[in-house]
Every structure is written in C-alpha cells, then in structure tokens.
Length: 181
Image 1 (cartoon, rainbow, N blue to C red):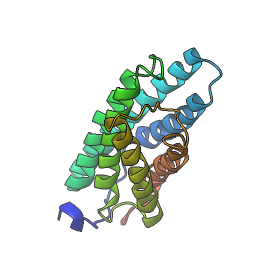
Image 2 (cartoon, rainbow, N blue to C red):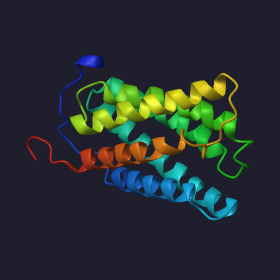
Image 3 (tube, rainbow, N blue to C red):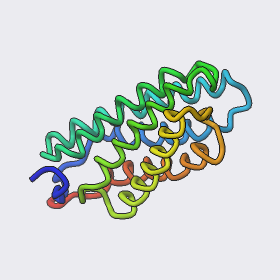
C-alpha cells in the first residue's frame, strides 16, 4: 500500500543515527534562534541543518525499504527544504530570507507528506500538520513581498517550538518497538 492510505507500521527500526541527528538538529536549531551573536547562530544552524539532512536521508531510505513511498517522498522533500535553509546559515538574516522562505515552503510540503499517511503516531502527525500550516503561511508572506526573516515574530519564530516537537516525535517514532521485535 502507498499514498494517503499508508497505515502500515514498519517492521524494522531506522538507523539509530536518525533519532540522534533529529534530536541534535532540533536542539541546535532552537539554540541558534536564541544565540547571542550571528557567528554562534550560524554555527548552531549549520550543525543543526546538517544533522537534519542526515536524519531525513536515513529516514527516506528506511521508509523506501518499508514500502512507505509517500513518507519517503516527504523526507526527500524535507532534505531539499533543509538544504536551502542550511545554505543561508552563515548569511545575515535579511540576505537569507528568500532561501529561508523557499525552505519553509518545502518544509511545509514535506510535513504534509509525512503527516497525512497514518504511519507516525497521531500526536506527531497533528504537530506536523500545525507546523506545516505555520511554515506555509510564512513562505507565502515572503513570496507575496513581505519582509520577514527566519527570526521574525510572530511567524516564523513561534512555528519553531511546534517544529521541534515534531522532530522529537519523529525521533520517538524511530525508537518505538515494532511488531515482531
């Protein structure tokens, strides 16, 4: 089965590197948002983005092996979005705004692809859906000409806690015992 009807629970666990990278990425991403200097923010976001790309690649491979194509596609789209965001890590917030908006749009699409099928636990799917809406709203505002940065308030700044909880949820999903284990 594939597509929105995906509800099968994978029989194997992803690489243990995936949840570790998700947690590192989530924590450093949040820490970077509160960094006292642009250099520390860039460092935190650079490591965060790299860790999230690694995690998403491992999860995409795992989901493909489990015949969960929609979820795997979501993680591949996530990689594309995270790569755009990562490329702006060492830039000024203003200069990286278009990259961030494009990445946020792809994050939103990825979160939908990952959250709609019944693969992740329901609370994680709900968090992913809310994060998708918040990032889509952010991206659309920038695409429409509004001057936002990755730290503008209320969006996207207040989307990050929901996003971080989603990433923690994915990490938790990686560790949940599977049937037959």
